[in-house]
Length: 110
Image (tube, rainbow, N blue to C red; front, top):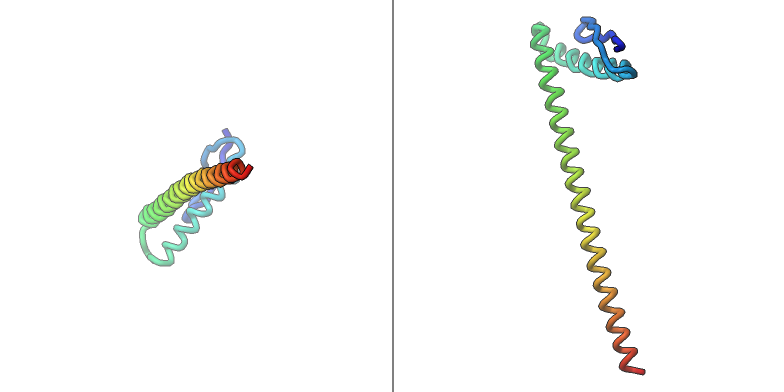
């Protein structure tokens, strides 16, 4: 199992990860480090553990919001599919009705 070296809050950590996941783990660690750095500017002198906890909470909030947006998108997509199926059915019924009326008129005229 490959190991990757990451840096968060000026500390280096050696982590095991799946084969081929090294770059992704480093990207994620850089994002966490970015959050900790932002918090350090906002909360100068705060203990490192507190910064890490706040960063974790911010990332959890981002994740929750993203999941909510994804659920809304899935619901909207399903609704749009339902709406398009309803519209297609209504159009099919309208066309069938018009064709039947035209057929009856033509049958009556002949």
